[in-house]
Image 1 (cartoon, rainbow, N blue to C red):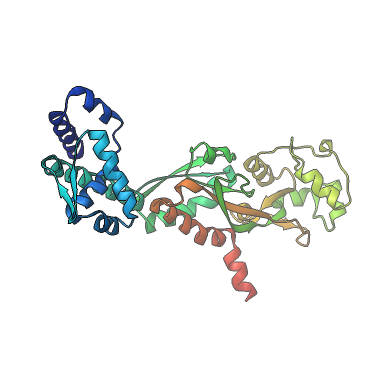
Image 2: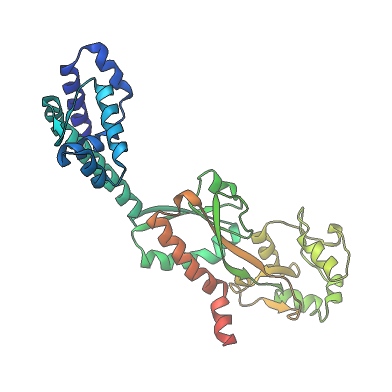
Length: 328
């Protein structure tokens, strides 16, 4: 507010020096010229002012000439000894310094806002990740960073980052948009699981071919499972599966209810110790997990703090830390 008042004072000084017609030219006033004006006023020469500002001498001279033209004032007399400020220059010096101080304060406040840790971060994740993987991770983060609040958005869309509806996102696909930055934080291991009630009723499959005679929970519109069977040499259509869903939480629910054999992420299956992994030798390609952020907000200290925490914690939550330790 003070900077605005001082700016008004500066303009009022200009008005007092000239008629209204001359002052109208200041409506497109270039406030950045004030730095060169003050440097020249304090240093006494264009060369010294240029050194102070870290620019070329002609640049300072051009700024002074442009400022004088805009204000319709002569601010300096050019002499052999350097620049001699005029009475008009001295009258404008104080409000000009106040404007410079206001600009510096604005820059400091903006920089400080970028570096503040406290505040809210919106994190977007798919339903299984948000419901099964992130709760424990975010509980630990709240203990480590109590000044940061998290809004957890359940969404499968990358567009929420592009439209600034979220600050960070956990996704199963690598971002292809140039405005997004992504880091792979782990691989999601998958397996075939069944409830003991189902196995007691239908028996335990011993080889892949046995799955063709079992109740396997399939996809609705997606083709991941039919493509998986095709890769194993078995071409089946969606009508082969008596229960079909594309919702991963519903898929898990059907497995837990003993409805059939389903394909689950290991981190989901670990929530229910009663589930039995069938055909453990079956190789299902793991899915990459990506942490994604918009390029323009990566410099925020708050978002960077959450980013670093998730990069460190998500691999452990996926079980990769335990696997790495076992492999050593």
